Length: 366
Ligand code: UD1
Ligand code: UDP
Figure 1 (tube, rainbow, N blue to C red):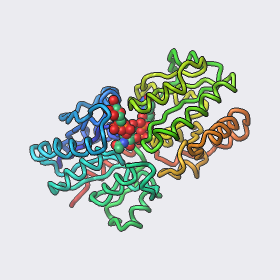
Figure 2: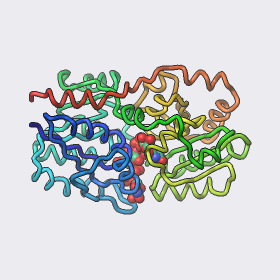
Figure 3: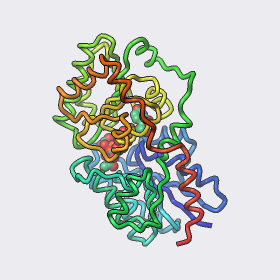
């Protein structure tokens, strides 16, 4: 029986890895061990609880105002004895976080094969997203198996020299997750507050945006709330204290803006389903919005998920205040522009990615 260890540590990794952990745990041919690094705490555990995944290990690495070096060093040092004790046949990591890079490196140092879930995403710009573009490329070099969500991502890996027999197109497990969360009869007091208006759901947290770019983004959001009486803004703020300080400065004390704590994934997906526009710099929201058929204005200059742009559901609006204001205003006032964004198909998967990955794991010979 193969022993598979899934290692992850942040909110988005939990949302995308829990469906896979559950699928693997249901297979007789696999022994499944979940180890969380605890890169996030408050934002990680609600997702684990929602999916009913109980980790065997919590490395509890998070500290206030942590640096990338803090996370990398702590994961390497704390994961190594766990790998020595458990001796997994394969370590699965996800995406592009520092947890993913450090966990893959720890496995590599012990010569344990690595499988990379959500492999092959690229901007080919090491500055954006930072440091995630390096993290995913680093993991890609170490990984023996690559589970690419789309053909485009698989194509990147093949062009970079990955062995074709070890690159699998599976869909993204986030679509598996969102299949379980959406409810027709959902209600929430914050949505009652926004009822009758046009709800803009905001998230922002990218490291390269912290500072000036984020100030411009939030200034644009404030102006939109001031200028358009129908607008309601809900922003569940990331726990990063640097992000919180900027949000407090620009967005507090406006009757059309609600700054709230991070929502549990069940709530967040249902907010997503009911909003009018998503304004974000997030990675995963580009995929979820495609599934929920909501337009995303992406406050970045590029994306590792061009499929959303091709499908029309995602539009890049950069970090410039005037541009963000103009693009949101257009969607608020031009029904044809709005409708044109939500006609395409969801390119990120069909909700069975975890099943495909588990089938592949069961069948692996080397
Ligand atoms: C990390 C990932 C990013 C991912 C994001 C998801 C890296 C380099 N970045 O960025 O790719 O998009 O997670 O949200 O891995 N904090 C708390 N409580 C929490 C979570 C975070 O207090 O539950 C604080 C931490 O103490 C830290 C700050 O927020 O000081 C930032 O967290 P960190 O994990 O370092 O980076 P993220 O920006 O969250
Ligand atoms: N999310 C959540 N609660 C929130 C905001 C986001 O559960 O209040 C979820 C969202 O559904 C998505 C993930 O968090 O699955 C995205 O995480 P984030 O934007 O922090 O990271 P990224 O995807 O950019 O790596």
